[in-house]
Image (cartoon, rainbow, N blue to C red; front, side, top):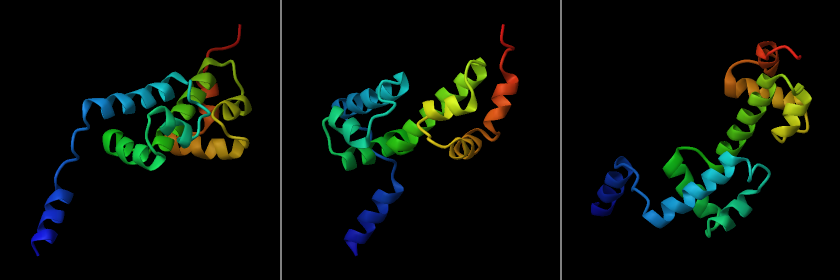
Length: 130
C-alpha cells in the first residue's frame, strides 16, 4: 500500500527539472528544428545528435516542451510554410512541399487544424506581386 501511495504522489507532482547537460541537449534539438537545419531529419537522427535514444529524447522533450519531438517539428514546418504563403512568393503546392507534404490536400488539412483556416487565406493576405 505504501508503494501505491508513492506512485500516486509522483503522478501528482510536477515534472522534475532536467539537469544542465540534459537541458542543453534538448535545447540543441529544439534550436536545430527552429533553424530549419533539421527540417527533414528523422527522430533517430535528432536523438543521435542529442546523444540519447529516440525513446529517451521523446520522453524528455515531451516533459520539457509539452509536445513530442515530431509534433514540434511538424509545427515548425507548417509555420515555415505559412510564412512562405504570407510572403506571396509561393503557391500552396510549393508550401506543401516545403512542409514535407507530397499532397496539397493533406497539407491543407494539417494547415487548417494548426491555424484554424485554409492556406488560401494566407495567399489572400499576401502583398501583391510587383
